[in-house]
Amino acid sequence: SQQGEEDPQALSIQEGENATMNCSYKTSINNLQWYRQNSGRGLVHLILIRSNEREKHSGRLRVTLDTSKKSSSLLITASRAADTASYFCATRQAGTALIFGKGTTLSVSS
Amino acid sequence: ETGVTQTPRHLVMGMTNKKSLKCEQHLGHNAMYWYKQSAKKPLELMFVYNFKEQTENNSVPSRFSPECPNSSHLFLHLHTLQPEDSALYLCASSQDQGGAGANVLTFGAGSRLTVL
Image 1: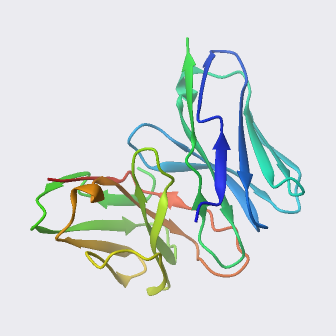
Image 2: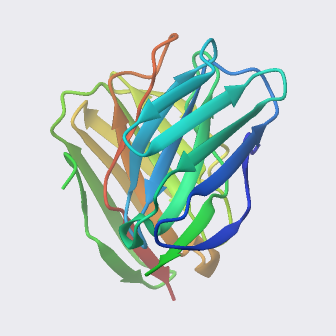
């Protein structure tokens, strides 16, 4: 069954703006990961946050995790046209494979 | 490419055909996965192999038959498929699948399957 669910389903912004995507999940997790997919290609791992962490940064990416609300957010700062892609959250419970959500489609126009 | 190679990239087949998708990873990983990606649906986990042993079969119809001859290669054998099986099939690998490890996946570029 689906574990993570991203919101919004689609997001359109201008270059230079920030993009925020949210992910909600249902059960306790070991870690939560964000992936990016360019059209028709495979997914690429962006960042992982463990259940005992609250915030992580990687370049222009910032991920937060609130285990009490079972939610995470991905912030992309100063967006570029090259950030146009679909973004997926994936959750892992101990000993299980990653379960992905439906994704957020981000469009960044120049 | 990312270290996980999938062939063919595109496949068109009739419902009575038999074909196979191939996945090869050069990362020294011990776990390999098949995911199915259909339009407007979440990625669906199909099969997981850990150290060549199948550890998950997510209620996949028997017309899909996986094979993992070693930790570097994974196949998905296809026969008597239906048009609704048309999708992007993604292979992935990770260091291993069990325990409390991070389980970060490296994906291939996918095989786009069209069933006529």
